Image (tube, rainbow, N blue to C red; front, side, top):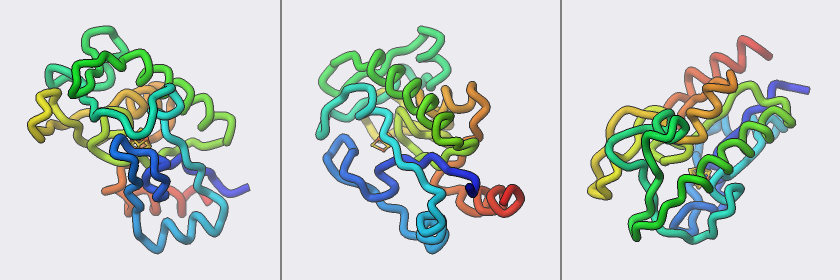
Length: 164
Ligand code: SF4
């Protein structure tokens, strides 16, 4: 079996985002990996029990996924709801699923409080972002699963070609 890639389900166009939409990543390499049976879609926020659509959420205080896992920060909805437990649960399930499916890499959409790996929003719901990791991306890193963002397709393609 070729190396498997866990991919944020919204990047496959599945309507799982907070706004009830997908965000398909249109690139010939995605089509090729799909045809080769390498892509395994997963949505940690849905897996953690959150509904779709749902209020947007951010990690508070300009912190990141590692801070959430260490209990130093919460994930809050714009409406004030605390969804930390759902984010952590969904991230743990994503890691378990990735292992089950034999994925040693993950292609996750950037900017999300779950899946972000290059930048995330700062908790002020003002559109301000900062370098950092979401909760699922932090758990993947901890588990030794290498995370690539949707802006790093070249780097992921090089990795896949090396390990194919
Ligand atoms: Fe997409 Fe990840 Fe958010 Fe699910 S949790 S909608 S896969 S960014």
